[in-house]
Image 1 (tube, rainbow, N blue to C red):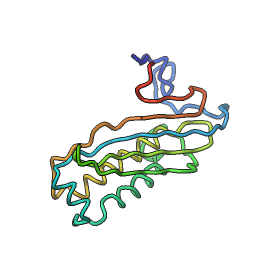
Image 2 (tube, rainbow, N blue to C red):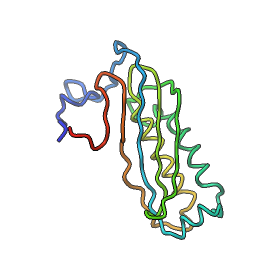
Image 3 (cartoon, rainbow, N blue to C red):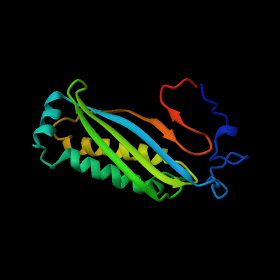
Length: 166
């Protein structure tokens, strides 16, 4: 189980106040993070998306763009996040009939003094929300679930892969 004491929380001062972490003395290294999430829906809703018949238009294409745009604006959405110069953001939406629904995967890259986990997670979250928004008229019972970090590389804390032993 990860340590969640105040000492381990870098965004808290010694007195417990929220503050922005100073990354000025950290080395600029290549950093990458990948996140995933799912939108679970009725089979008929997935069929609607795949047929291109959603009233609001191209669901998967619009969600892809929304995710990319969101990653670029993470610092405006999440308090205390640093503004990063992203070198690459990819958002993939894979229809999954077994779910049924859409699996969203996002990867963000930069070279800098801090990681891009929040950018990847924000991209996934907003892409999932966009799928929901564009198809909610057909299926208000959809669920967004499983949003998580899959992997990250670079930086002082090293690499992380979901499912690796702690």
